[in-house]
Length: 144
Image 1 (cartoon, rainbow, N blue to C red):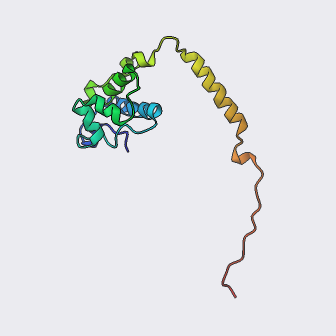
Image 2 (tube, one colour):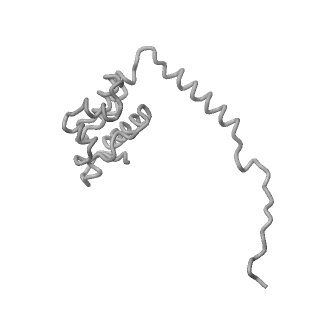
Image 3 (cartoon, rainbow, N blue to C red):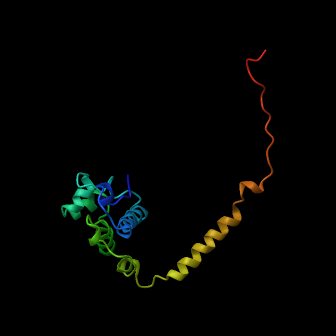
């Protein structure tokens, strides 16, 4: 499984931001679906080839994604574009409807995540805060 954009796989010259956006698409897909979208972004790979050949409905059936929103599918398909120049820019991605649902409050989510992080940090102690454990070593074996 890989996050690598096709242009990296094929050894072509590439734009760093464009390949990073491809990887963002893979990561978002994994977060939403819980599986990799394809094994590799190669024309020969079955799942990626479904996307390249326009078999979009078949692809989403195969990855159990028929219930995904049209906005999500639109965003992911654009991020998975074979040609880097056809992928969203960072600004286009940030303004995509799937990332800007009405009623979604980024600041509330950020505050909630900070609370969760703070509580986990307080609960877990560093292994360096604990007292060392003395271990008895056995003597060498087979020595007479």
